[in-house]
Image (cartoon, rainbow over all chains, first blue to last red):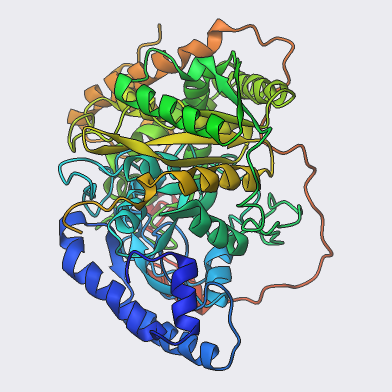
Length: 483
Length: 101
């Protein structure tokens, strides 16, 4: 039962082969049994889940349903969920019970989904391995010695181990796609502005975007249908109409032109990953797609520009954690200055402190033009590269990451090495484009992912290609041993 | 090449209101130096004619009618605060006694 798709589960719920309460219990029991191995959840909302499941059963009996009624889900612990702890993986929010609900989580609640719990993550979504969490690292179900990726590592591990059918994540520089790739999932970061950011704890506001993480493109499409849409509460929310992303999943790929940016097949890419990408290309050609080499000449500057822009926005956003209005407060502050500095110094972890300091430096008097303004100019060059490329191709394909998942404790020591995990995913965030990672096979027992980047609001194209690929391959249906 | 000293870190940490223990200043200095040298690559391109891009969307801020949409929920929000009294957030004294007459 636990490996079924949303569509299959919904059918069984509607036929009353199984009740929502029974289905919820199956997943709660799996969480209880397996999560001690993974540490993918920070909070389990079992009591709430059973109440919501009971209500969902009532709605099915009354015939007032959506395709998501009664389907369990887990949210990254970065979305504010009313009356439920929302920690962002940080000590500074360890005692924070959100007084309000994020727009996106509310939409899924209204659609009848069941909340199983809140998932582990790198503190404030800063990290690529989930090792930066106050609640401890998360293990990858495909190899418990390895990281699940990050920052949405808990969501990725939980879905990959079938502790929940689907989960939500957020992606500022690759935080949905990189863990999806490391855990054999389909994850999509939509166009900037597609999903409301209201109630999503801000890291870098001009880059952050929420998205679904699932075991198939079809499940991701169903979820995206219900997560998307204009929200008056988010000043950067786009008024663009929401498509039915499931309606075009079965479109033929005949005539679709796929661009291969030569800068993404660089010396950082390992052979194990490169071979799998070649296989994906062969399969897509067989499905009718045409391949074309393209160039995105400023790609190499993406990570350097990102590691100025993201920390700059982070240093400003995280100024709100002051030990006064909510969150952690240090003991016996000497004066107000000491209260701020010690609450923040004791409440934030090392990577968060690093990024706040880099951002503070980049924005400080005398350095603003050299760093922040310059990085924003590079950002435009990167966005313009994509604009030119989409004159010739429909979609851009690349590896999601240069390597498969690595061992826990391996690169924690060198921040720069960790940053290089995101070299292929960062450009889509800087440009604001939608991008997806889908399973592309295994190397030495570890899953690897391929990334599709689309033009603005072309989420449907990405999901169509991923779905068509998943009709002729079964990588996405592999189940990690022991789960 | 930019190199940040312990003194630089102390200054940045102060601006960011972050307490950094003395024995960690050195390693933070080393890490920040590495990061700044990594991002240095942005200077390899001439951008004098390029307009900075602050945001993926070229949109103006939306305006709305000036109407009341939220009610005051002080009690609810202050329940989350570490220390309050009579509807006020409490912080250490900021006015120095010795300056009073």
